[in-house]
Image (cartoon, rainbow, N blue to C red):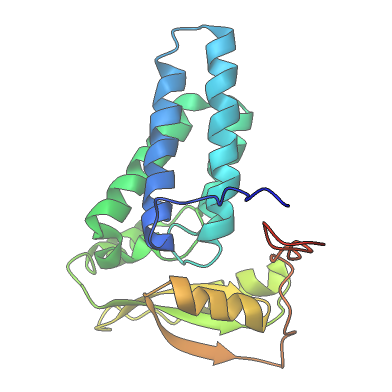
Length: 216
């Protein structure tokens, strides 16, 4: 007789709840690094935990325009370089924007990159801060990184100060990834499918050969 196996339970009802909890936990871990007062063992312990959180967040943020995967990976790079003050500042700012939803009214947060802006661009964007009509556009296409960056740059060139809408872009390279994005990201209001992208995602692991409690 096979012993009944224990099922793993989760306290999260949806991805959005898990996402916010991971961000808050990352902020606590990075804060703990700064509070370690030079204790090398403690610093390395918290750094390892923070990098694990970054990896988990990157797998979620790839489906959102903000903060997006790029910003998460940049935090990981800062942690690897042990630039803990800078990492803490970035994490704290992003958590504040997410919790308050203030990124919706500030279009400089929707480009999914961290390029420096000219003074004229910054002044232009500051005039949009009161705009609340935010949404995200999902592009489904197997783009290279350079092609994706070109798409984002072209979109920024088309921004109009008088436009009533502010939007971010998320790019998914397969139909499966696009479906996941639509399921977890309630900000997506428009989808553009280009040039027949592949169906299968490279981000989905193969299922286990048998369910718990069943014979192989």
